[in-house]
Amino acid sequence: MRVKHVDEILRIMRNIEQIRNIGIVAHVDHGKTTTSDSLLAAAGIISQRIAGEALALDYLKVEQQRGITVKSANISLYHEYQGKPYVINLVDTPGHVDFSGHVTRSLRMMDGSVVVVDAVEGVMPQTETVLRQSLEERVRPILFINKVDRLIKELKYTPQQIQQRFVEIIKEVNHLISLYADPEFKKKWQLDPASGMVIFGSARDKWGISIPLAQKRGIKFSDIIEAYKRGKEAVEEFATKVAPLHEALLDAVVKFIPNPREAQRYRIPKIWKGDINSEVGKAMLEADPNGPLVYAISFMRVDPKIRRLVATGRIFSGTLHQGDEVWLVNARKNAKVLQVSIYMGPDREVVDEIPAGNIAAALGLEDARAGETAVATSLKDKVPPFEKLHYVSEPVVTVA
Ligand code: GDP
Image 1 (cartoon, rainbow, N blue to C red):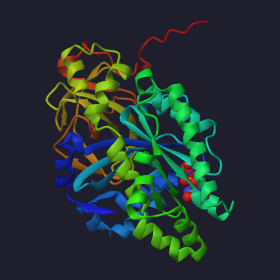
Image 2 (image 1 turned 60 degrees about the vertical axis):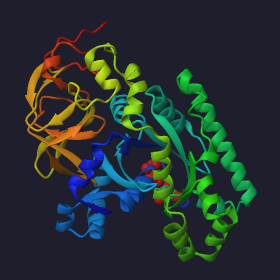
Image 3 (image 1 turned 180 degrees about the vertical axis):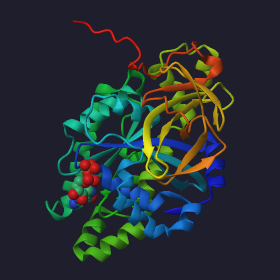
Image 4 (image 1 turned 180 degrees about the horizontal axis):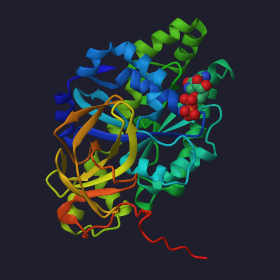
């Protein structure tokens, strides 16, 4: 965990080029949780305040015991790439196929997905489902071929066989991308392993590498096989000193996943049904922090520490401030934002304001449900929500 001052994170968040919003998607048991945990352990941001309460190392243990990594709606990671700092928001995605809208709401917050595929099992039905859903929301994928240790230890593959296995998996994933991506992205989003869009490794053993990184560091498949032959310590050394998983994955995220502004330019016309030539439409296309507020709420969860409902969502336009009066489009009510916070690791840290492109938590919006859109009061009755929700008070029309 990286101990950071909240002001430093906010400074990065004001620079939209240094933000990435991603999620991890996978077929069950392919390693989504293990991958998230290893990212959190290596790159999760923890605030100075919380670090003061518990030592960073112990903190992770406590959080794991409480199962926070699974339950929290968002975890922020810190990564430096070519000397520049980045905040990478890791959005929680549902672990199973569900039809409640939960998937779409998670996808709405993210611009990129890390698709995790078990090297032995390969592409499975849920890999196809989650990839299709992501692509339909114009969420750009990169690929993590996980459990490579199994190819080495269980299947005793030679370097050639390992390489062949990767080629097969990449080919299958690329086929799905050409099948499900919108026409303009079918080619553009094809995974090119030579440029680093594919990482292979072991989330359990915490190592990972891409082809360009392997070339840069002079690593061959035979070196990895050799490390496993030498035993646990050699693998640990490889994971910590030579090829840490978080570095390979987060480098690829920064490099290939668009920043929120780039992403909103092509995602808004697809995921929002309003007029993109209107003032608010243009502001969303540019993720303009000075535009009218549009805050799409993906989750409403009770914070057990304060026993209050916390909204988590993405700011597509404008800046969310503490004290803002907002209009809840579905609930058809005004509400007041009592507190605004950002995620520092799995915890929240209170701030005065958060600009467009970021993921924000807010208190005071108890009348909202997951899927609600909160907008500036000046937009009342002027914009459609991201998602239409049926409230109990509304007449629900059923077709017999
Ligand atoms: P999820 O269902 O996608 O979240 O998968 P989990 O992360 O819970 O992993 C499922 C199982 O695979 C667990 O028993 C993990 O310990 C195991 N696993 C995860 N990553 C690896 C890996 O790199 N190698 C091996 N051999 N097992 C792994």
